[in-house]
Amino acid sequence: MNAVPAEHAIPVTSIGKGPRPGDGEGSVQVPLDPNVRIGRAKVFAVYGKGGIGKSTTSSNLSVAFSKLGKRVLQIGCDPKHDSTFTLTKKLMPTVIDVLESVDFHAEELKTEDFVYEGYNGVMCVEAGGPPAGTGCGGYVVGQTVKLLKEHHLLDDTDVVIFDVLGDVVCGGFAAPLQHAERALVVTANDFDSIFAMNRIVAAIQAKSKNYRVRLGGVIANRSAATDQVDKFNGRVGLKTMARFPDLDVIRRSRLKKATLFEMEASPELEAVQQEYLRLAQALWDGTDPLIAEPLKDREIFDLLGFD
Image (cartoon, rainbow, N blue to C red; front, side, top):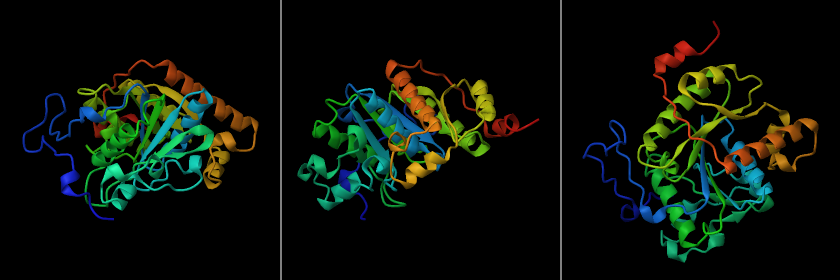
């Protein structure tokens, strides 16, 4: 894949000019183009440590919203482009792939070239990412939202979920925070996941100074207990919105390319489905913004673990 042509890139106007007011020390963030703002939909950005289960969480949350009668769009923001495969049953081409196929002449694209309908009517888009070592994830997110607006795909959408690459919170992969109303952090009950969550909290805090995004809460995943998550939450000002245990049916659902709402019924599976439906309803009803203060790295080392 070729690098994004320079003439199509969004200029980084703040580089070399110091941080924009309120952006945070040393910031070189690219301001959001007002022409690519998402409209009336409720927008959520899902972050967390790489491999923690963000795509599983995002896809099942998307289905839960659709079960509540909402029109849902899920946008995967990862070069692996596997965010939506349990919804669509296969890997979809990315926005960058299809843009490259028309030499970045976006006017030549049709809706069906980059938007795919998944399980229970959830609409799916894989933004993808730039070639390794070149370009910026922020460009990819911006172009994806721009295409969706140009094709009027956001006009009738109730919920947009960004499923964002790993725990990378550089300016590019923090770009979905410029669109989101609430940011959700997926974590497990372990040090590495919570360390990544702390950095994500700092990124959300920085973005909230210039954009409407606020912390919505924590989703504990693959966690029989939450003692370490609870300890961290209590210290920084977060709260856990939902908890999903480490069940084998969740692993099997990924292998079967299916959401949890399509798996064979069982009491434990029904409990997980109900937790997703409860979370979706709580998010739709609206959550109070959380004001959290991230810790210094050494403070996390001192805080977590057994006495």
